[in-house]
Length: 224
Ligand SMILES: [Zn+2]
Image (cartoon, rainbow, N blue to C red):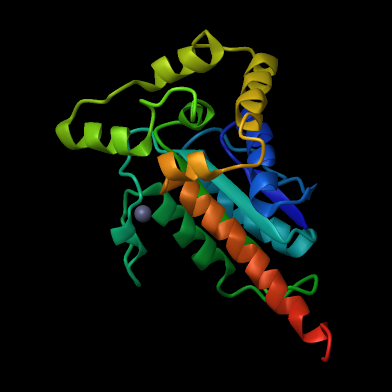
């Protein structure tokens, strides 16, 4: 499988590479996205060009996009209702960009469209890195804090807990990110349990790719 990863920094992308392989259960070939993004809203702005580039100029099967939620609303089960769209939710917004951009593209490179996997790190990717090590850091804790207007921890604190500094060098950031996600040794139950929307949505999209693939190869199976 060939896929591209778009996130907020090269360190995030290094960690995502590990997590995506865990979900897919197999290594993949990384396709370059051609453009880089730095944080929100840059990811949303470059996404249409990246999707068109991947569709027409590469053989990428899919694109993985993960952004930090910062202080935006966290995607929830209500947002999954057919036709529903939360204008401030970054998962809803990114999914809408995929839909709008890919809707009218003609098939290319033997496929209809580039598959979508969208995740949301709540409130920042460092929360995922602390999963299983710091039990106070969960999506539920963050959402409960938003409801009463008092955050249980700040993004700055999360950075301290992961890197031992607020401004890590890029090599240190990459090393720590990969170290922490590799701790799960392929078992993502804890991450899906503690981050059911932001990480869960990403994992569900990726598992959908495998089903999509299985459906494509099924007709040539035994007896066909
Ligand atoms: Zn949403």
